[in-house]
Length: 348
Image (cartoon, one colour):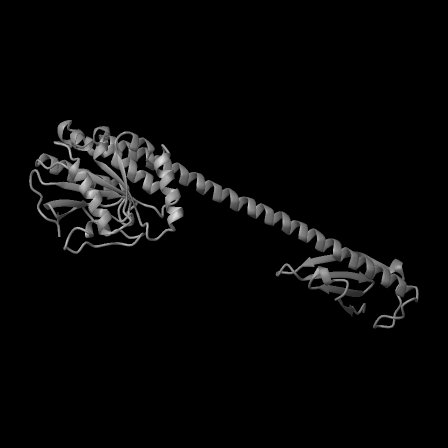
C-alpha cells in the first residue's frame, strides 16, 4: 500500500523498463510487501510510494514506477501516469532527491523498450538533473560474470547507451549484492542531493502550463513510436515479400516437376508405341484378342490425364476399336512399374 509523502521528505524514484527489477529493488528497503512480476508481466499499476529507513536515515520514500513496454498498458499510458504523479507532487511541494534507473544486464542487445525507458527518463529529468541519476545494472547473479562485464563496458562506452549521460553527470552502479548494493546506491543519491531538484517535465506542466502531449518526453516517445511503426511495417512487407517469393519458387518447382513428369510419360508412350508396332509385325505375338495390328492402324494421339492427387497419370491411346490405357503412380518409377489394360469395343 502506498504511504503519504510529506513536504521535504527524501524521495527517490525507481525507474526502468518492465522486468528490470524495480519492485525487487524497493523490496530491499521496506517491510511492506511489494508485488514483484516476471520478465513479461508488470505488476506496478501506478506510482507507489513506500516508506523506508536506513541506519542514520530514519525515513525516506522510494517510488516504484510502472515500466515502459508494460504487458497491459501502452507506453503512452505509462508516460501519462508518471507525468501526472510528478506534476501533482510538485504542485504539492514534493521534490525528488534522485532517480535510480535500472537496466537488466541480461538485455544483451539493449532492446527498444530499454532504450525508450532511458530516453523517457532523460527527457523527464532534463539536463540539469543528470547528476542526481544512478544508472544501475541488475541481474548480475543470472548472467556469467565475464559476459556481464562485457555488456556493462559497452553500456558505459557507447554514446547510444550511457556514455553521454555519464559525461553529463550520471553515475553508474551494479545491483549485484542484494540489499548491500541497494543501500550503497540509495545512500549515494542522498549524500549528494541538491537543495532543489525540479524535473523538466514538472516545470513544463506546472510552470509552463503545457499538456503532457506537448512535453519533451512525449515528443521523444512519439518519435520512438513512429520509428517502431515504420520498423513493423517494413518487417510485415519483408515477410509478405518472402511469402510471395516462396510461392513463386514453389510454383516454378511445381512447373518443372510437371514438365519432367510429362517427359517421362512421353518416353513411356514412345516405348509402348514401339512395342505395339513390333507386335503388329508379328515380332511380339498377339495381344489379348489374338489380333495383330499394323503400325498404320494406330489412330489418334496418346493422351495424358493428370489425376486429382497430382501424382497419378493415365495414358490412353487407340488402335482401331481397341483402347489401351497405361497408368503410372510415379513418373520416376514409370518405366519399371506400369500396368496395361485393353478393352475392345464391339464394332457391331
